[in-house]
Every structure is written in C-alpha cells, then in structure tokens.
Image 1: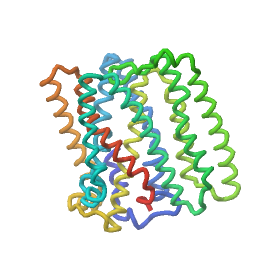
Image 2: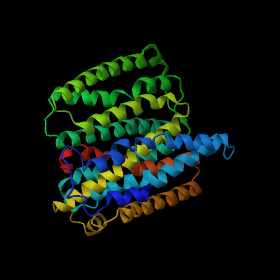
Image 3: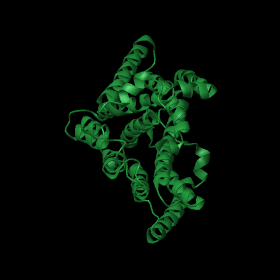
Image 4: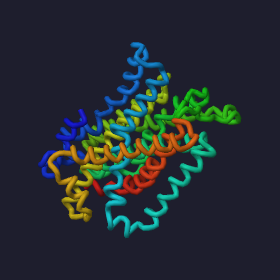
Length: 355
C-alpha cells in the first residue's frame, strides 16, 4: 500500500493540478490526509488476531506492533524532518540558535532514560499527544489558508478547542485508573489528583467546544463559506480522538493514532518539499534530487534506511549496557523523535509553506 500511495503522491503533475480549498487536490487529500484515518485500527486488529490465533502472547504482539510501526512508518516520518532543517543551509544559517539547541534533547533523553525512565516516558507521551494534535491544527490552518472565505478569529479558536479537547475526557479517565501502559511503564496519576474530577471537567469543556463547533459549521455551510476538507478533517479527528481511549490495549491503540499521524506527515512533507523546490527554496542537491523524482519511492526508502541504522544502534545499546530492551529502544528512538517534535513546532507555525 505504501508503494502504491507513493506513486500517487509523486506523479509528475503534482504541482500543476492544485485545486482551490485543498492542500493539493481532492483525490490526493482525501486518501492521504483525511480518510487515511482507516489506518488507526490496523495495529489493534493485528495484535488481536495474533493473540486469538495463538500465534503470539499478548506482550509479543505488542512488541511486534511497536517495532513494525516504528520501522515502516514512524522512523521514516521523523527522519523526513531533516529535509527542511539540517539539510537546508538557509534554515541552519537563519535559525542557528534554534537548530543548535535541539542537541540538548538527546542529552536529556539519555540522562532521563538511565536515571529517571518513568519520567522520560511520561514526558514523551505528554509531548507526543500534543504533537499529534498540533499537526491536525496545522493541517486545519493549511485548509484555512487555501479557503476563499476567511475565518474570523473566534471560529479558529473553536476549531482549535475541539481538536485539543476530544482526546482527554476518556484519556484522563483511563489515566486515573492507571491503565495506560507505554514502554513497559504505567503512566503515573498522582493520588492528590483523584480529589479533582479532571475527567468530568475535560468532558464538559469538550462538550462545549463540540456544541459550538457543530453550530458554527452549520452556519458556515448555510452562508457558503465553509471549508469542506477542513470540516472533514476536524470531524474525523474528533471521532478518532474521543473513541480511541475506549479500548483496553491503549499502547497498541495509540500506535494506531501514531500510524495515521506519521502517514499524513510523510506525504505532507513530500508535498511541501515539492512546493519549496518550485519556489527555488531548496539549495541542498541531495534533497532536490529526491523530491524531483516522479515517484516518492526513493524518498521513502532513504528514510527507511536511516530507520534501519537506528534499529542497529538500539541493538548496540542493548548489548553494550545493562539497560532493558524497552529502555534501550526508547533512549535511542526518543533522542531523534523529540528533536523531530521540536522542529515541527517551527513547521506547524508556518502554514504559508503550503501555499
């Protein structure tokens, strides 16, 4: 499926056929950005089939999903970030301090991974959930920038509020039950928080934003100024975010969300780089050669190879230290992943890159 989608993403007419209101065009945005949400249940279904068939034990199935998602889609998506950061001389020169500060993160990850592993996983998961939602906000801003009718500020805030709150009513409830397992760690929920009805409060805030969003969306369609793709994206994201924590195996379920997020990002970065190349903004010859190809295959395989190197480094750390398999994996992966989050805050603040 990835190679078939790569052929679609990398067609020679990618730039010339853009449609108003869409990031690229309807036939590209719908399968690759919006309805690629169908990928979310795949990791859970695979883990479930592996268990009920007796092929694997529950923990083995979880390990399989984590490794497969990280190798095939998670790793390539995070390494693609370097195409507009470290491989862009103008970015490095213009944002030198911002770029250099990124190297603090691997040092922080190693220190926490060795001495405060639970804190590292909690920090990672908190940032990861916000990062996934920040990407959806960025995509909504891209659709907003491509829409002919401008959005008033209050409408934008309602969109943001709905995107940011749908995940947390059930998510906080499951946290309070200590049912969130990530990287072999139960995410902590302090006892003093149990006196505060956080889940209920989050539910009220979510219900408020959902009600206002539905009302304003109906009004926008009646006035003929609604963005169809933005509405679809926010609606699909809300459904996924709200219902995802209902499942029992939260580690695998959130790998499903990660799969969708990473899939969106790979194709989004491919398009952004094609647009940057068209505007003459790519000065690195290697990146130019990758994005000017008629297929996305070489682009994807390049970052898949980088992911393979990360797997080898994980095995070296595991064999050369007394860290457990989980710790070895997260110390290596998060050293790169948190830098990816860090640089994406820059990207997600610039929706004009998609114009």
